[in-house]
Image (cartoon, rainbow, N blue to C red; front, side, top):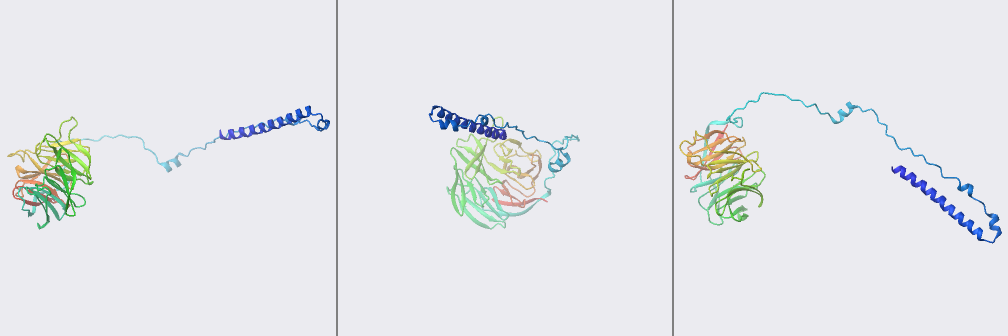
Length: 374
C-alpha cells in the first residue's frame, strides 16, 4: 500500500506539471490573438504534438511472499514440544485420624534441662530473643530479661505502672508489650514509646511473624467482641474476626488468647475462653479447632494458655489445669503430651532457634527449659 501510494503520487505530480505547461501555452496563444504584432504570430510554434503524448502508464507489481518448507525438527530443537496428555490411576487409601508422625522425631521421654527463677508472681509470658536471651512478664509492672544461665540482665518497668498483658520481640530485637490500656508500646534503645494506639479496643496478646508483621489479639471496650489484627509497622493490614458464615471465630471476652504463627503462615490462637485452639490460614479462613484429647483431660477440661510452634511443623499448647503440654501436628491431630517434667500450672510458651521449649510455671514464677525432639 505504501509503495502504491508513492507511485500514484509521483504520477499525479507529472500530470500537474503537464497541466501547468498547457495553461501557460494557452495564455501565450490568447496573448498572440489579442496582439497586433505580426512577428509574435510568425514566431509561434505549436506544441500540440508534445502535449498529445501522455505520461507512461505505470504497472505496479506488489511484493509476493514465497514460503519455504518448515523443518519441524528444527523448531522442536529451538522451542521444545508439549507431550500429549496422559492419565494414570493408583490406589488411594485414606487413613482416618492417623497423625503425621514423620515431621520430627519426638523423644520417648522429654528431658528437663534447666530452671530459671524469675521472681515474678503469677508468671504469664516468656519470649525468646535468641538462643541465649529470654524476656519474661507476670503480675507486676516489671518485664525482666535473663540469659540462658538464669542471670538477670535487665529490668524494664511499664510506662503506665500496670502489669503487662503480653510481650514479644521484633526482628530488630526491640521489646513490644501491651498493658491492658489501648496502647502497644515499643522499647527501643531503653526508651519506651507508643507504637500502636487503638480506639474502642484493648490490645491483648502479641506475635511477631516471620515477615516482620505484628499480630495482635484484642477485645472491644464493652468486652463483647474479639478479633485478631495484623499490622505492618503501626499500619493495620488485616482483620480476622468472623468465619465464612459470619460467626465469631473467637470467644467474646477478655480471656487470654495467646497467638503464634505456623511455618506455612497459618495463625494459631489458644482461646482460653472458648477452650479451644483456633487455627486460620493466612487469609483468615478457618482451618480447624482443637478442643483437647480424652487421654489428657480426664480430670479437668481443656483450657489452653500459651502456644508456640517449632521447626518440625509441630504446634505446642499449654494446658494449665491439667499441668501438661499438648503436641499437635499441622492438621490439629494430637500426637502426645509433655507431662513428665514436674510441670505445675504451665502458662506462657516460647521456642528458641534449636527447638528448645521454654515453659512458664504460673504460680511458681519459674521458666523451665525442656528438650522434646531427638
